[in-house]
Image 1 (tube, rainbow, N blue to C red):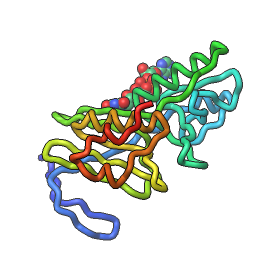
Image 2: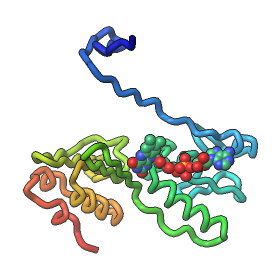
Image 3: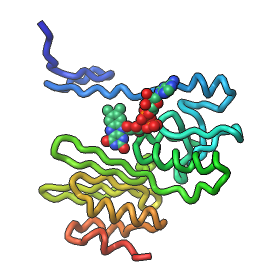
Image 4: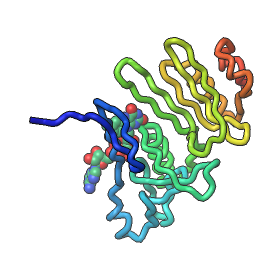
Length: 193
Ligand SMILES: Cc1cc2nc3c(=O)[nH]c(=O)nc-3n(C[C@H](O)[C@H](O)[C@H](O)COP(=O)(O)OP(=O)(O)OC[C@H]3O[C@@H](n4cnc5c(N)ncnc54)[C@H](O)[C@@H]3O)c2cc1C
């Protein structure tokens, strides 16, 4: 007879009643081949944002890589998403062909969970402030660092997602105070380029 979950017990002994537990086990890239080639690996094959490894003849792309990010100095990030795999893959291919990889786009991610469409743009790690725009059927969280927009999560709010994506892609921020008013369309706070 399978048992039933009754509570989650935290490390400090706190007991939280629960009837469902979601376990996130993470992912570990297989980097044996890269290691055998002598490539730098730190939780993934270390690349630049375009997929260059520390060996001039080897490029890598996708979930097996970790890369730097502009506002996370000294940290390497695994961007596990279809967008990253495709964009880094294209850039790596261009480098392998001896052509310019071009500029790197802003990382973004989407996921459909049941009826909900979750969209993420930018990397929220390292934020020191956030703005929540919530209505009955949608939610947006804007993340700021030093007063500058760095990322946005939205649920069922593609308009806000697109506005934040445009701002980040163009190196703009979105005024924090104005964005806190859900009646103000986020799009109206992004300057056209
Ligand atoms: C359950 C789940 C849900 C996800 N949902 C989303 C989502 O909603 N949105 C999003 O953006 N991302 C999502 N992702 C992440 C996304 O799928 C990955 O970031 C993306 O597929 C990475 O692409 P990749 O080419 O690096 O690796 P993969 O897509 O994993 O491709 C690697 C390929 O290499 C093959 N391979 C492995 N070893 C060898 C070998 N030795 N020889 C030959 N072939 C080999 C594998 O079979 C595989 O086909 C999800 C991932 C999972 C697991």
